[in-house]
Image (cartoon, rainbow, N blue to C red; front, side, top):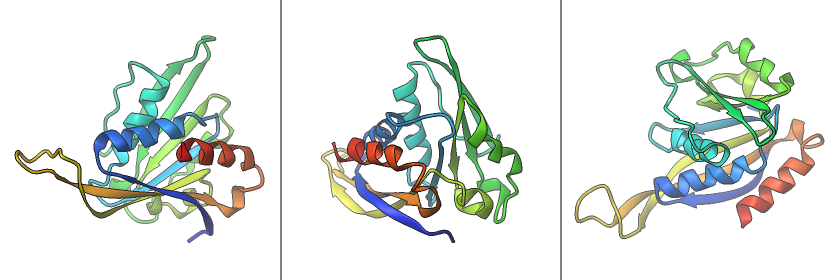
Length: 183
């Protein structure tokens, strides 16, 4: 396991909260960024990506790459520049997944990557820009639920971590991310 520093921790009590956290992280997105998402089934990894993508595009349809392993979203910015967002899911590859082709994202001039179940690839885990650990953390009385008549939902905790190896080159990125998430 690599060494990392906790930037901050945030709770989510709904899918909307989770998408909002993804959208906040998207505000600091830049080429070469590699985001790792770790958490049990159902913690909201794909919802987080939906929020991330909604902040960058009005028409990105995000689906879980569990069966296809990779989704690529092509985006155009206001200057017509094309960006590629790679969204991977390593769950089906299992422990010690070989992901050498994914490592090229770090040097691509118009691409960034988001990897679900990144803990399955130790080589990739060591190259992350940001690691997000998602865990179930109890229940919240939200007044809304998918169960008719219930007003309790499962609370999730998001830990935003910075791998120590990247602290020097990413100081500005992490400062911006910390400000966005504290807002």
